[in-house]
Amino acid sequence: MSVRHANALTARWTSHLDDRQSVLSGAGAYPLLALLARHAAGPARDELRAVAPDLGDLGLDGSPTTRLAVGFWSRRGLPLGEAWRRDVPASMRGELTGDPTVDQPVLDHWAATRTDGLVDRMPVRVDRGTALVLAAALSVRTDWTTPFGEGWSQPRQGPWQGRRLATLRRSDGDLTALRVARTEAGAVSLLTVPGDADVDVVLALGEPGRPAPAVLPAAIGALTGGPTLPQPAGPGVTEQTVEAFDDRPELRVATVAFAVDADHDLLRRPDLFGLAAATGDGDHFPGISPQLSVDQARQTVRAEFSATGFRAAAVTAVAARAGSAPPRHTVPKRVLRLDVDRPFGFLAVHRGTGLVLVAGWVTDPTPG
Image 1 (cartoon, rainbow, N blue to C red):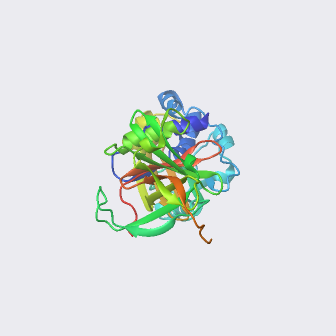
Image 2 (image 1 turned 45 degrees about the vertical axis):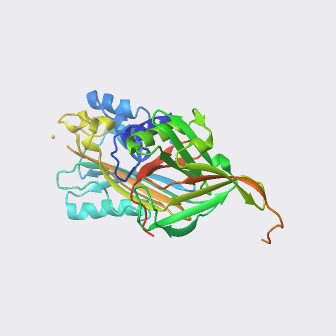
Image 3 (image 1 turned 90 degrees about the vertical axis):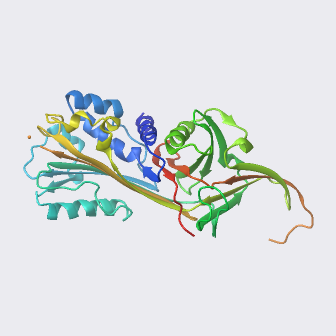
């Protein structure tokens, strides 16, 4: 159930993106919102439960590729409720001294160590009035089962025309890795790039001109199935018959390497995260401590897609205040091609649960 709610949060969040390059993680924010909902009261509880109704397991325990860590720091002397102490054990808790020059480096070090340095600082900044900080760090690292070949190209047409780009190419016989979903946003070509453990990355190419807020939610919805179109009918997909040394069908993929960074202020759209009521004065989280109100909620994310694999990390934080030789003949062979040569989306998906770990949009690929 938690996976379904976390994916729904990710889909809603992506629908509010603009068409600039970005990346986000609803899975990284969901545990914090669900934990706050459990200890909230009044309108703050109602809003948070509408977004994150359960604090169930996201199914990542024991994953060889994905780590999720939660940390909590409270100001020295702040009274904490017994239920909160049970939910957040001592091993996850730290203390704020009230001196930002002492506290901020501690928080930044926690973020960096929990993400192998991919995110090197805590998204929120503390000051002498900060009563508590609650953070979650999600990190993903997977290698491809079949690496891409690396090179560079300069597209002759399209939005990347004339740019020197780091290009990735790969051929294999698994045509099922490519499918074309029929969605409310039109046809979306979905290519699954398998990781060598339990995380795959799905590249999502929509019809020309379709923006990120349309393509990404549609791609997330298509993960669980739905109507499909014949493969050659998809955006960026072509089919041809060539002369080859064998007749096994082949899927040829041409895409681009990318690295995407983003910083998100969750309080720019507090309703999306169930945090509108919690930012006003009041006793919103009596299960944690009296008279707390949220004054910061942010996420920092980085994702990298290369010839050999994918890695990503997201740190989400909420701060509150208190008050071989060729054969000798050839045969016809079916070849499907997918050319990712314009802005596209990507989803890192935990294979066992279907949890979307990170989602993003690429407009500015890595230069060649």
